[in-house]
Length: 153
Image (tube, rainbow, N blue to C red):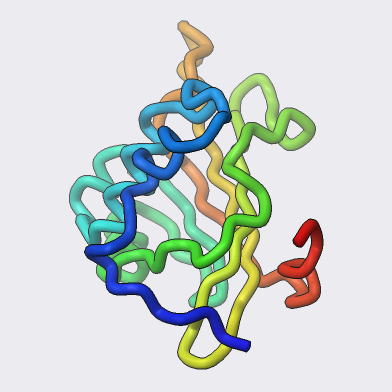
């Protein structure tokens, strides 16, 4: 069964969704919240502003490298908001390193008449002097088995 399509203007921004949960909002860096809101709003320039020049994006549409390629191929269309969140956006310490911090989320979206379950990973490059998480340098996503949407329901 397909999740009904909700008009985009009726959906809260990603920042608003995070604020309405009991989770600690500071767990997700502001740069990542800004990116997600920009993608949902369809603002390719704002999304690109929080990415490194050598950003790499991989997913069902292919692999794109460099901010101009990613902006043209991926950021030119607004991101579809999740119909159902299966794994809230959170840091993945086991995937992170001293030079990069990895955050991931899993969610379901409606694509036409089909429901698709996706895992999305965001890699933030750390500033070498301060150690602070900086700009997005990688965005990866792939389909997960559909049966995962039933887990935890």
